[in-house]
Length: 149
Ligand code: DHK
Image: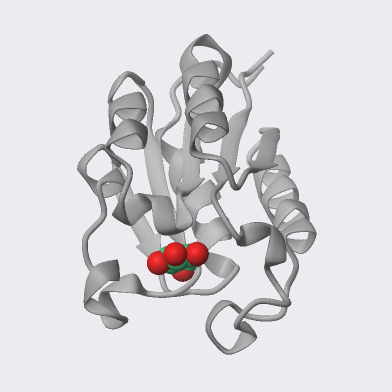
């Protein structure tokens, strides 16, 4: 049995669809979950999809990836710009990590232009709205090495 792809979402993403839709779009996080599940299924994979507003809970889930996940997609939201603790947790993983953003933080306010998570990520996908997640699933499925049977 192949291991799942973990898709972890940080603070305020529970409000996706209702929060600043001109920036983040009108799809809900449940819509994104469905997109990720369908895309992963096309690659013969499953996903574990979670969201938390709490830094410590996200760190616990990142640690859980050790031994449980084939790869990690993380939209750290604002914690990407602030959390050395999340960076350290990611550095303890030995698997593909894709940092994913709906918007393109590099084209926004100065404080969004640096990401601690990028220091540990295999790659970053930003700016394509909910399609960023689908592209991230494609990317990690191309990189994940465990058996799919
Ligand atoms: C989501 C957030 O909540 C912001 O804090 C980031 C990211 C960008 C996104 O585009 O998905 O700066």
